[in-house]
Image 1 (cartoon, rainbow, N blue to C red):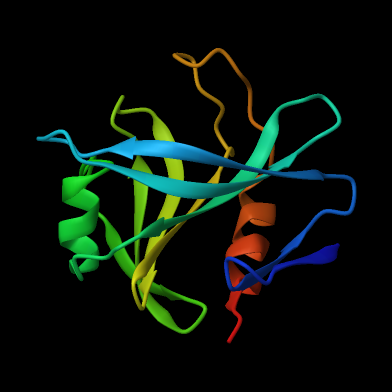
Image 2 (image 1 turned 120 degrees about the vertical axis):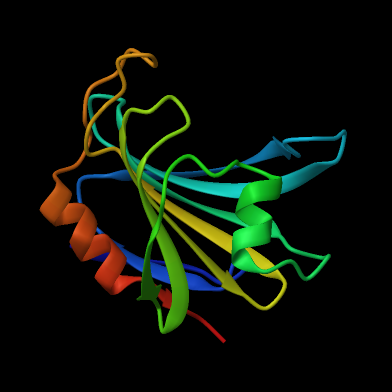
Length: 148
């Protein structure tokens, strides 16, 4: 495993050495409105082209609680489990908006909300298979740290 550090996004995370790292920007639309935020996405992809996991960083300029932010932007797919990631309070979901099994964690730090999503189940709707084992995604979550 290797450590990836993003100085710009202020985090580090461990990943399998054979994964390719890419960065992009994407839009995230408000659930009930026209507001759009720009989030940065760091994706870790296997040699087969299937993503293993990704980390997003989105602004929380309105100072919403983590619960409010999730309800406002990606939606609230299922009942979350509370936990911590990188020493911060986090919410973990085990199902997505399509009611498929999912591995997704949200954590807020300052004016930024981070999402860590592992492709441990694949997606029938999306047409792709799993890209990481659940135990490896747990290693990713345990390694996630915020940089100062």
